[in-house]
Image (tube, rainbow, N blue to C red; front, side):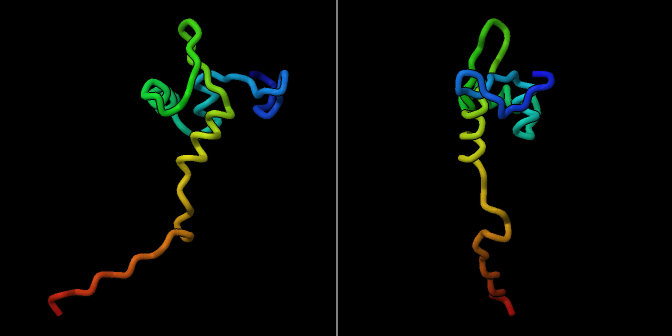
Length: 84
């Protein structure tokens, strides 16, 4: 994918990318991407020895596993000290 953007489309779809490009896109290591693919957490396509990823599916996975920012999370009250 030298010189092409991830957002470019061909026939109305985003291109399939290898594990290295998928990891770079998601901010994960190649091994994490491959491990999640083999565990079935991220959908992938295996053609010969190549493991390919659909960026739309990768976006879906990332959206499902995104937590709210720390400042947006509800705060918990500190426990009272029973021994004071």
